[in-house]
Length: 104
Image (tube, rainbow, N blue to C red; front, side, top):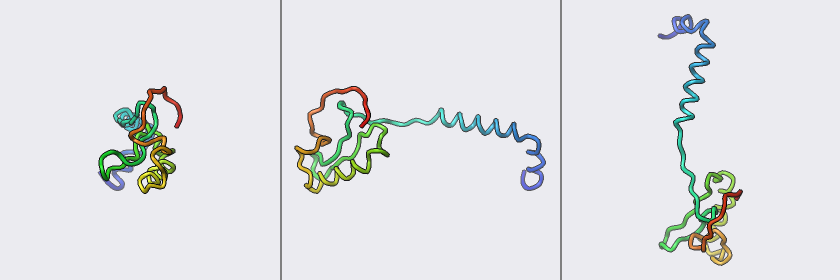
């Protein structure tokens, strides 16, 4: 159905159409899924790894938008040697102690 016929068919059904659209939107929200990455100490992994040529910038546990700018800067500094491994609290090979959830 198109043009004027579609308009006539929908006329007077605004509330029904709105309820239908809300039902669809809600069902789509319930069907979405995602994954949070966590380390045992609940901190991201930033910098070079023991595998030559592989560096990581991951593990923000859902806070990637907030932490990605500063994390990327720190990861780049670690990759290019401007940040010593001992000064990088987020290096992938750091000793990890399990901790409770908190804010980055």
